[in-house]
Image: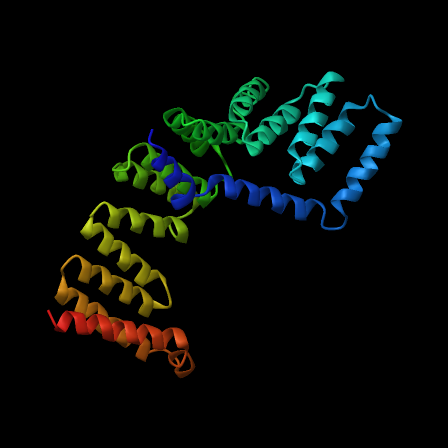
Length: 289
């Protein structure tokens, strides 16, 4: 698999690892909103000095180190917990997670595989496994695992669906039909009016040169949004690009009408004035052709 496709997946499309770190930081703020993380580590270190054979204390302190992005210290505590006889799904998951964050993808994969022996259908571990496989450039395997995750996760998020669809395109950049099907799975699970999924669906129709479907998708946004003037403009721009000048002029007129129907205080907003300028410029382009 070409490196530029992987870069496209992680950077241009959806920065999986960056998003992963955001979740870690969010967990940090939620868990320790009322206390200082360093202080908690010190407290646990004091407890460990008094009861050095308590494996659960090492597991707990290792997780604090992990949240603090001190991955070597975290792994050292996890290994010590293992030496003391602890062998649980939680410990193995956190080890795999830490290896992944540290960039040791092969160790992460081995540990995630071992973790799945505790629960072969655990979707949380399966998702981590898919992310690890992506980093190892084993994309088809990752897609198979992600397919399981999408179908079996109860509280699926729009980001998960988009990541799944983007992975399909990373493997085959022209496979927009299956990527769109993935978005449809998400819409069925999360509701037809999930904005980010509908927006991604529009992108796919445009990139795949599905003009009729793209126009229908613009109409969907126009019908379901209160601020129709912006969507009429976006539709007009698209119609201009695909060489439908008369339809583009109609969309411009509809955008202007939508602006006229706004309350005066909204009409004076900078965003509306900027939109009016864009409409004028687009109209000039159409009239000069």
